[in-house]
Structures are given as structure tokens and as C-alpha cells.
Length: 567
Image 1 (spheres, rainbow, N blue to C red):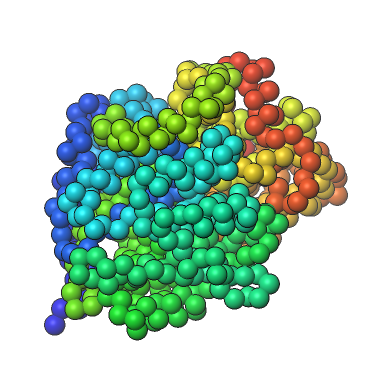
Image 2 (cartoon, one colour):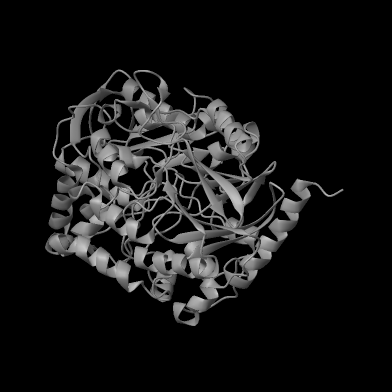
């Protein structure tokens, strides 16, 4: 007798075929004009339930350029496994032709050249068009938002998230979960959540004083769709007080809490749930690990680590969907649920080519309304990129945006060494393009932006580097917090990703002298985004704006200061 897992594997083949006729295996196309909206949206409606997934939008309401990572290493059992392959290896794994739309959307090679042809991606008015198209075929489809939504732009910062809330409400989501939203402060988050017309979910959000589930967030919600009783369980980012300032949300504690997740799955199954969906902000590797420990979850909609995968990953009886970031993609998952079981699925990762997909005029109007009070500030030109410089963020060890930020910190704060957080959000800028204030805020917009200047011993600098490296390269995914390695300016180092904590980072070198960092010597270090309350210094956007204005044309040389071993 055929098993449920055999059903899922057969469905995986069907999913790949859907991708081949739509997104996954397009032939080589010369320019975006050869694409059509019908091609992007083409999908054979299947089964009786449809899920629509968006995640990690980071307040990017308008179309953007976004370069995918060049380096995204896995360790332990995840070494060389998706999503830890990039570039040509990624294209080979998924049968993607060089120069194709999939090449441009999913990998970093030839990014700037391909961007000239394929144009920008994303835009929430284009996302709305895709959502409306899916709802036209399946009117009761569930739209689920994986979080990191109310954060990451000039207008989001100045409206305390309200601009994005207003836009997302026009799309009518059914539920969301959370991460960066909490850096608005717990009071502001509660104010927004209390007015949301949809479910705010997080089974792992607890009252920190009583160590009990928070009453401000539901662990799950039931939906009746296509004659199927569906339970959506929320999983907020587990490491909030470690990765972000706990003093901004002292009432709450988090954690993976997989034992409680199992309890919630058991509870909703006992209440008649025929399909269990986890709306997660764990990060992909953590979701894989959780899927191996918690039974009874049919679908995990993954977020946090910004991975975009043309096909689901199957762990046991659970399928994991990764839908990218910054509004570049929308995932559609159609499911065949019979007799209380998920028997098969079809999936499509839909790329939002913004020159191809017609914007939803109603949502465009709402976006324009949110931006109107700030247009003068948003559009002010600070400088421009040189003809050989692309500014991008993603990569395990460095990105040219952070190289620029570190250069500014060293120059403006008169430091020996600079540090910039290894966050994964922030659009890209092409060579020879103006850098506006909006562009700068898209990569610096935090509610704790102060650029500190302090003294650190070489020993303490090494400790910081080791701690961050362990957050990224610990072989146990439950100890990985997502994000990338702290970016450094003015210092080079060697890292062996396969060594244990305390032994990964070596050969720390002060670049301006070529001398080794002395553990007992003191160095002037400038950085930003400290999680410590009361950090003093100018906001990082002022520091970098002053630097860009003085430079005029920004040129960032390739960064060769990090020697990676064991990749």
C-alpha cells in the first residue's frame, strides 16, 4: 500500500513540473519584455486548499533591486544542502538556464547586467495582483504573512509601522507572526495588534514575568476552507532578546519551545484539524530540525533567513516552503486534503517581476498616500555609485553595503576598526545609480541606530567574533540565530567554519598597519545597532549620509580581508 510519504514524493515531482512550465526551468530569455504576466501566474488549480505565503517584506512597498547571496554556507548535516548552495551550483540543482529570469531572480551571478534587462522586483501593489489572481481561482485561499513586515524603511520608521500596516490591510491577510516588529517597542506592537483585522499568532510568545503564554497573541487559529478544517500555528522568531534589544519588549520571552509546539499540534488535531500549517519565523535550518522533532505538522511556511526555493523540502511527512524576502516572491501551495490527511500538493514560487506584473491600482494609491508626506526626504540624492560598484547586503561574511557603512564609521568616528551587524535585509543599488536617502534608510532603518565609539581589547574583539560565528555555524540548528557574520572594517581575519567555538576565528589583523591584533592592546572600535540600552552616538544614517555626500561618487573595492576555511 502506498504511504503518505510516497504521496508527497509523487507530489514533489508534480510540483517540479508546475515549476518547469512556469518559473523553475524557463529557457534562456534575453530581456524581461519577453515575459508575460500570464506566464508568471499560470497554475493548474489542484486539490481543495490553497495557501499563499509572503514573508520578510521589510517594509519594501515599492519595487527594488535585490541581489541574492554569493556565500550561504551550511554546516554539519546541512553542509551543501539547500538553501546552502548559491550561484551556478544552485542553478544546476534546479535546472535553471544561464541568463534566464530564474537565474536573475534566484542567484547572484551577473546580477547588475541582468538587472538592466529584467528590471526591479517586488512592490506590494504587484504582490496584490498575484494574490488577487490566486483568489480568483480559489476564492477561499489563505494568505499568510511570515513576519518582518513592519520594519526596514524610512516611512516605516517615521510612522512606527503604520504605513506598512495600512498597505497590508488592503491585501487582507488571514494571519501573521513576528520578529523585527517587536523593535517598535512592545506598547506599539500591542496597539497595532489590537486593531488588526486578522490573527496575530505566536505559540512561543510568553509572558516573561509569569512564564505563561502571552494573552496578547493566539497560539493558533482555525479556518474552514474547501471543506477542510485547517489549523495555522504561529511560530515567532525564537531568539528575540538575544538578537535584538530585550529592553524594548521586556514583557515577553520567546524560545523555540518545540515541546509546546507538539502540544499545540496535538491540541488542534484533537479538535478536528485535518491540515496543520506552521507559520514560522524560525529560519530554514531551525524549521528543518523542528520538523524532525515535532510530528503532525503538514506544512511549514518558513521565514527569517530569506531563502527562496523553487521546490519545497520534505522532512518526514512535512513540507517546508521558502518564499524569499523583500516582496520578490509569493508562494502558492495547493493541497489535496482527504479523510483528514494531506495526500498531495502543488507548489509554485512566483517571482514578482515588477515591469511585467500589472500593479493593483487600489494598493498603489494606498502606497502613494503613505509616502506622500515624505517624498522630498525620500528622493534627495546623497551621491551615486561608481560604474564598477554594486551595493548589496547578502553574503555570510561581507556585502558591499556594509563595507561602505564600515568605511563611513572608520572615517566619521575616527576609529581603527568598524563593526556592522550581519542583517540580511536591504535592497541593492546598481552601478552608476543615484543613492537617495530612501536607499540609505532601507539598509539602516533600526529603532536602535546609534553609532557608538568605544575602546576594546584585542581579546574582547576576538570574543565578539567567536560568539557571532557560533550563532551562524553551530552544527545544532537550534543554536543558530540566522543572519550573517558581523561585518568588520579595518580588520581582516581567518575563519574555519568547522571548528568549535573559541577556535573558529584566528589571524586577526589590523589592515592599516598589517600587524596582528594584540589580545592585550586596546583599539578604537566604531559600530552601531548595539542591543545595550543607553548606547550613545549619532544615528548611523547620519554618519553614512555625511560620508556619502563628501565622497560624491562611492566606489567599494572587492573585500578580500576574510579568509574562509572549511567551506
